[in-house]
Amino acid sequence: MTREEIFAKVVEIIRPFVKNQEALDSIGDSTNILKDLKVNSARLVDIILDFEDAFDIEVEDEDADAVNTVGDAVKLIEARIS
Amino acid sequence: MSELPFRTRAALALQREVGRFSSIVWIPPIVFTLRVLMKYRVKNAAELRKRYRALMKETDGPVLICANHLTMVDSAILAWALGGSWWYVFHYRRMPWNLPEYKNFASIWFSRFASWVTKCIPVVRGGPRQQVSGVIKRVQHVISRGDTALIFAEGGRSRTGRVEVDSAAHGTGRIMAAVEDCKALCVYLRGDRQVTWSTVPALGDSFHVDFELFQPESLHRGLRRSQDLAQQIVAKLARMEEEYFASR
Image (cartoon, rainbow over all chains, first blue to last red; front, top):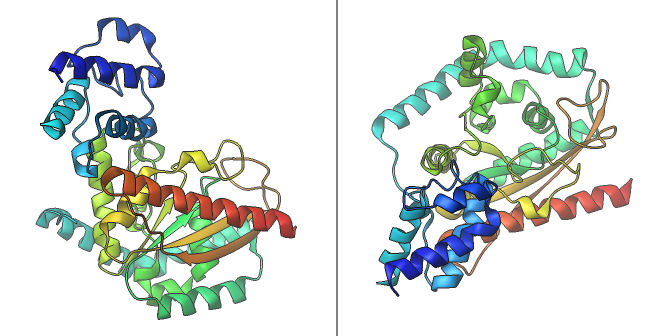
């Protein structure tokens, strides 16, 4: 799976949780999931659990702490897949 | 469970000891406020405390108190309901650590100091995960060393007035997962006149308090395990709530 494919899938997973839909137009690696997309912090766990299902990976709590931006999520998934 | 840096451990130990030695000064006014000024009553208080003290005496290992949440003074009412007042002076490790929202008291130096003395570890709800994680690690540290801590299993006050099973606070499960042999003391608290969430309970309210010691288990690993444990705890509180309403 290429980085672009992972990125696209990550955005697709995050989309239903996003409160600031306008921010999705300019979404990139540096987009902060909580601050820019206005995702509820409690929902971030649900998003990462969805990553686990979608990419068939397992994430530890401490690794999830490092997920602040979309790029962080992609990086975490890339590391788990490889 | 990862070890906290020495400075953090030392700061927690200092906070605990200052709180312990000053507890004779700050516990009575809090209880006076609840009992006399607010005229609150705990139903079957003597029996409840006897049960709680016996349970704490016979329970080995770390205990995390997991409660439902309807008002901003729930933590004070719960601590008073379970342990009374003087008992805590002599069993200070059973005075639960609390995790109040930082924004609620950060603006005034006195409230910051008061919360420090009264075993509070402030948390910024919805803050960066790494910051929240730091708070969770502090709680893991204190309970693994024999103190108790109180966490609201739904993360915040229930907006429906009932235990919200879909709002399990992940941090609860994370603490349970990280601390070996940790037990959850699920506590259900409700004032008779409490219809939905509020800042404080109604003046003169009477409180139903019940608790059950519970050790959730999960076959999952990682983040999913923590989430599973957190959901089991909230489900337990929801069952306790059903029992409360069925017996009214």
